[in-house]
Image 1 (cartoon, rainbow, N blue to C red):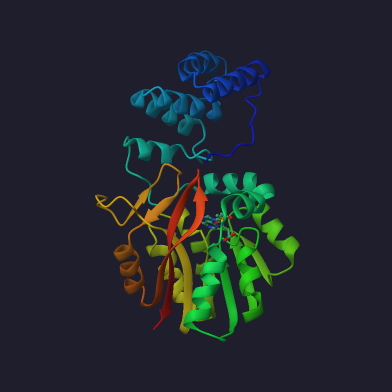
Image 2 (tube, rainbow, N blue to C red):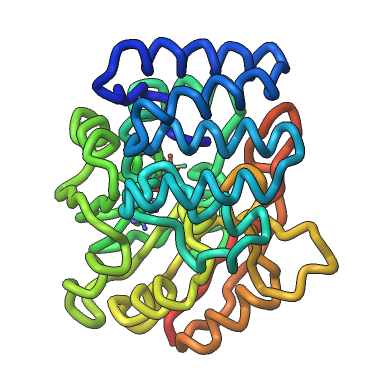
Length: 309
Ligand SMILES: C[S@@+](CC[C@H](N)C(=O)[O-])C[C@H]1O[C@@H](n2cnc3c(N)ncnc32)[C@H](O)[C@@H]1O
C-alpha cells in the first residue's frame, strides 16, 4: 500500500542495491534483503525509503523490534511520513494506531495511483462504491434532486458520474492533485479543490449543501467524528450524508475503528451510528454489501445514509 514510485537516494549504487533488496524480498529471501539494506543505509542514512524497506524486510523475518526501529528511522528523516511509517508502527503495536493517517501518505499514495486508479479498481477489483451510494439515494429519496453537493475524496470522479444527473452544482475535494486532475478531465464537477476533507468543509457555509458523498474515503480516516460533524454543519435541514465504510470484522476489537493490514481503517456499526447521532444526524438507511475485492477476497462495507435533522 505504500507509494510505488521510486524515490532516489541520490546515490546510484545505493539505489541499485535497494532494487536488489526489493527483488530479494519478492523472491522470499527477506533475510538477505535485510543484510543488503543495512549495508546500503550506511551509505545513505537519511533516506526514508531505505529505512522503510528495511522495516518491511525485518517484519518479513519476524523481527518486530528491528522493524519498529527501522520505521522510526524512516520517520526521523521524513517527519511528514509520506510512506506511512506511523501506520506500520501502529500495526506492529509499537505505538497507538493513529486516529487518521498522515496526509502526505494519502497524497503520495493516490498521486502515484491516479493514472491506473480506474483500470485497477473498477476493472480489476470490481469496485462499486459509487453505484451502491447512488442506489441508496434512489431507494431513500426516489426522484429527489439536490441543488448543491460536495463529493469528499472525489478521486477521479466516479461518484460524480453516478449522481451528476440529480445534482445542480457539485464540488469535488481530494488531497491528491493528480486524482483531482483526472476528475477535472471528465468535466463533471463545477468546482474541484485540492485539500483535506475536514479543512475544506470548515470553509463552507453552515447549511449551504444538500448532499455530501464519500465513496471509499472514510476507510482512510480512523476517527470519523471530525468529518461527520463537519459534514453535518454544512448540511441544510433535510440534507443527506452518504458514505461507505469497511466493516470491522474483528469482533474482539475494543475500539469503534481499527487499522487493517491493508493500511485502511474499518469501522464498527454502533460506532458509526454513535458518530452520526453525536453530530445531529439521523440514520436514514444502512446496507451491508461487498463492494470490491482486495487480494482475492471480497471487502464488505456499510453503505450509510444519514439525514440532517
Ligand atoms: C479509494 S479513493 C475513492 C475515490 C472516489 N470517491 C471513488 O469512489 O472512486 C479514496 C480517495 O480519497 C482521498 N482521500 C483520502 N483521505 C482524504 C482526506 N483526508 N482528504 C481529502 N481526500 C482524501 C484519496 O486521495 C483518494 O482519492
